Image (cartoon, rainbow, N blue to C red; front, side, top):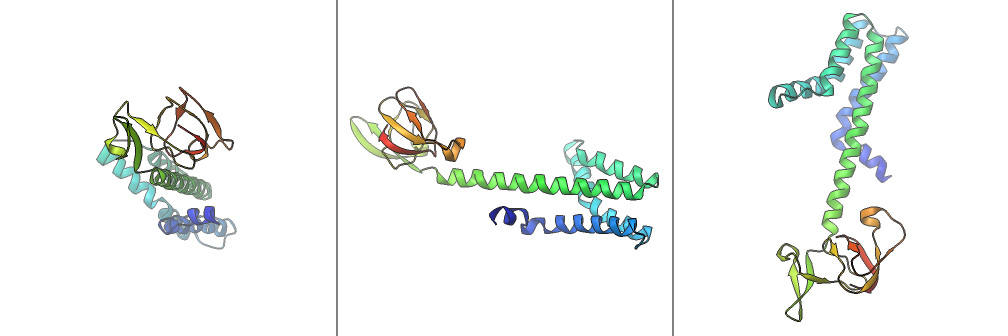
Length: 196
């Protein structure tokens, strides 16, 4: 259900409408249920954001993206009177772009969630005492203490202790990894057993 929600986000409703419009118009044109002008209008609707993006990339960033080539291909299919082929290619491209956008959005959301899950403070050993310090106040060489059940607040290398660390949030590994002196540890991972 969560995956379905990420693919049907409010910002993607327009994309879905374009895909359905081009696909339905292609199907109806194939069965001669609509005239050519309606298919061309549907294709223009489908091309709108591609042309807009292509133009913005070209003018603002002096960049030639795939949108330009897609637009040219569809225009060539229209000029060559291969209307249906152009419409089907356009529909396939719109579907591919929709999936890429939705996947990218899901990845960005996962990264935001991961960043939000990293502790804001760390327990540091300074001058023989343990003190709580904001993450942004840590210095290279600080010794950070982490106990069982806590999230590791920063990336680092173990200088003392042994522990079993759940790295699934970062690496996707399902089995906790054993960490000892000189092992690398990652911010956001969970120390399950032991202390570092």
